[in-house]
Length: 342
Image 1 (cartoon, rainbow, N blue to C red):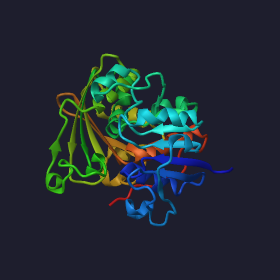
Image 2: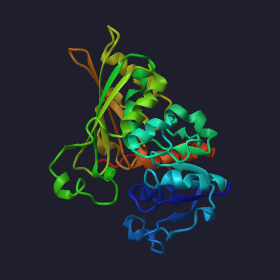
Image 3: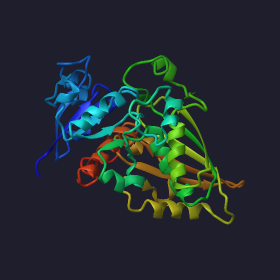
Image 4: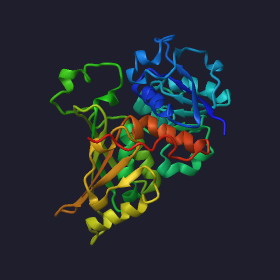
């Protein structure tokens, strides 16, 4: 089978670098275009030194001149919705890594992102394969989930789908790469090192994304609260999911069995043997989500832990997983690397 041509729009950031790293070993893909306005003409290794062996240079073509079977759009929120229609008009399938097309309810997007949506008529499939695989197969536009929502939703789905809880409190801790390649006061080393920093308390824009998806699979009234924290690691998100069970006589072992059965056929969700606790180091560099540490305390509070690499399953790896499904490839193609522990 001939290879498909792939373009990466906005390839200068961490997600662009991860897309190139992973796609470079994908046997059915040829990376033909990687764009950056500021770095036009430069070798990709000038920004991504680990990609020295790739014979790729940044370009800055007009949207109409991007000729690719699949376009990964890795530009910021707000910029993406301006250019995605052009790539669709070119006949490309598009995987968008911004938040611009993740919401079924456009007013919710406009409220939380503070901007008017320019193309509410475009219908995208929320690209979490574990819930939308069949829809992804036939889609031309995929809204790749946010990094926090990926770990949070996967840690919650079996509970809400079986209506075992009506309130979930999510505490997530993320590595600094989640803040992006551009240095800011929040990602400055003296701010991050030897510190744990809660931020966007009760106001993070991933909150409505998590709520919308969970309410699609459980009670429309399920309440979801989310607080992110920045921790002094480079990669990874670990999410602690707290809830109170609605049903009596349910044990932690019952919940562990539920999760094991729910995800038994999912290639990238690992419910850990013996209910071990997930580690960030175990998923580093991989497309896996690990779930475990399922516990019920003496006041009936249930705790479930999930861990992902924010740049892989939380972004670029999941985008490639979506591409594989859209193009009829083996879903795991190019994504079988295990974590980089220790």
